[in-house]
Amino acid sequence: MIVEDDRDVRETIADILTDNSYQPILASNGAEALAELRAAPAKPCVILLDIMMPVMNGWEFRARQRTEADLSEIPVVVISAHADAAWAASEMEAAGFLRKPVKLESLLESISRFCQSGP
Image (tube, rainbow, N blue to C red; front, side, top):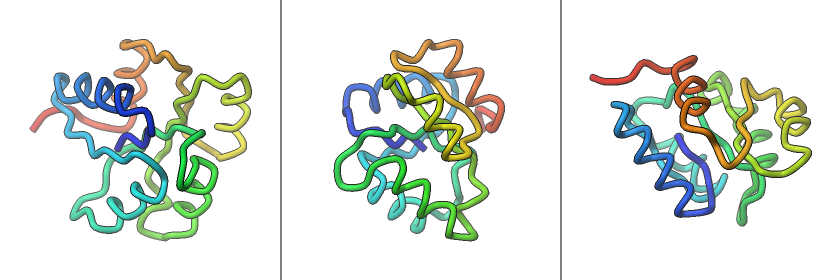
């Protein structure tokens, strides 16, 4: 799952993942992501989470995700350009952190830690 408010970034990451045989779920903010996760028949293997978003930011999303038993075990990788983002990822107990702009190799390496590509 890609939770990112910047449509261009969200779609670029989705295209890269699709080209590498992943099936990303997209959300533009934390509230949308929670709704998608609750409705999904199968949970994603990882969540790529931006921190600064309207409606519900990454901090709020992560706090709520951690309180729901069926969502709390999904690993989160924080993606952000902010200087304190590595600290934020640590505070959120995220499984990983990627700095924007995300490098292709780092993105795919991080995703492959949690997901198998292809059908």
